[in-house]
Image: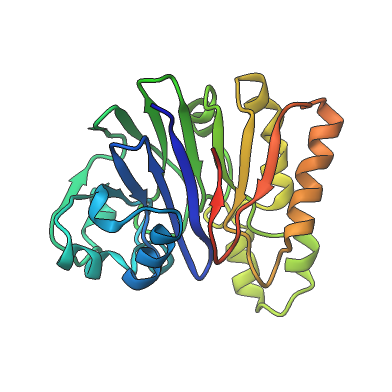
Length: 253
């Protein structure tokens, strides 16, 4: 069965991704209202009642704010690392170790640790029995070999590209917030994101969706230009790169 993957929205105002093979469907995060999640799914011919689970990256509001309401109306589990699970006010929350694996239909979902200023944070690798492998990594201040090891072999990757260095440095944010964003527990810049593209390409990645772009400190054009410059420099000729819409649907595969 063909696997499809979308970001439903992707920014500091809300984050959620939808993955399906036509039989089994689930979300990574639900960081907008239940109404917005429902509307987003409906716009691609899907519905909340088809979901089998939500997999949560961390407890910040822009990743979990719709979960409580969704779980009141629909009976599916919410999977999260234990420190994150403790912060989610919803039924059917399943707490896990930092590295855990769950099976959903023909999918295998595996977590890996990321570095963010939250109780805990993780990314996910999703493998399907068809051979399709998808990675999702946002909300991390830097990239470790462990993270790239997790993503290597993924055909398609949702990859944070949160801010442009100059826009952040010269922007309106107070110094402490700028420092937090640029720290090892903050977010990835466009340049940090672009730096790992050659390694991903070498290990099979051919589609990349630049995600979690800051409305204040980044633009679609700057994020994409930085990534495309790396593509040209390193000869990543058949890698398709796009930016996830902050407030609407973007298809990864």
